[in-house]
Length: 298
Image (cartoon, rainbow, N blue to C red; front, side):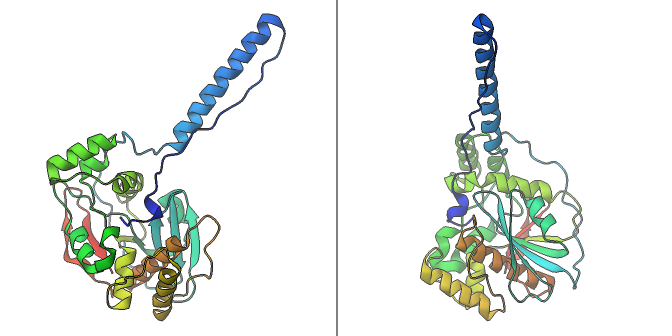
């Protein structure tokens, strides 16, 4: 969604294995060949693990799980996609204070680590369009003004599940009239992960949000400062503090400051969902063939 380090390439390199043979003469040669073969296979295996599992993955066929009831005594979680997985801000039931910053390689692991949650706000598309752009993207782009470039157009469902970028581009052009940005395509692993997660009965509500839209809502106007700049971080910290959320003074090792602040903003939205104070863009959520209401919550 947003044009940030979140959407850096999710592709990694493969590890190279090593082995050693034993014995003499022909036996030693065979041992080395076997070791080299083992190392090669080990390297291929490591490389396969480093590649996004999204490629070639079949679309889930189940309907959305049952929507959970809100527990007024529950905590909330803001979750944002990162280069290595997910970053979360776990806020206590009061909705105020300093949230715990969590990191996990999968969405399921992240929510498991945030015990007692009743609502989660996530910055990844919830509800995928079939043959056209989402109103949530179009209207949010207008709402954030100077930060409009941070709102990527969500690819249609078939393009999200395409095995290659070329395929995704062709499908999206046929159905929408425009291609898929590299950033949006590289986010597809997170999109599919969440798409599958929502097909089960969950003990918490999951909604979509957009961090820059959150900050605009907090400010009561568009925010012009760049999120990755020192001024941008200071402004966003101040907006959160005015709402009673005090981001940690430094992000944990391996987590970018802007990711942490975005997760805190998403946690603010999750608390608003919990207390029935949130609004949505668009006002009336769209629902596509997946049956999942699609709107950005603020």
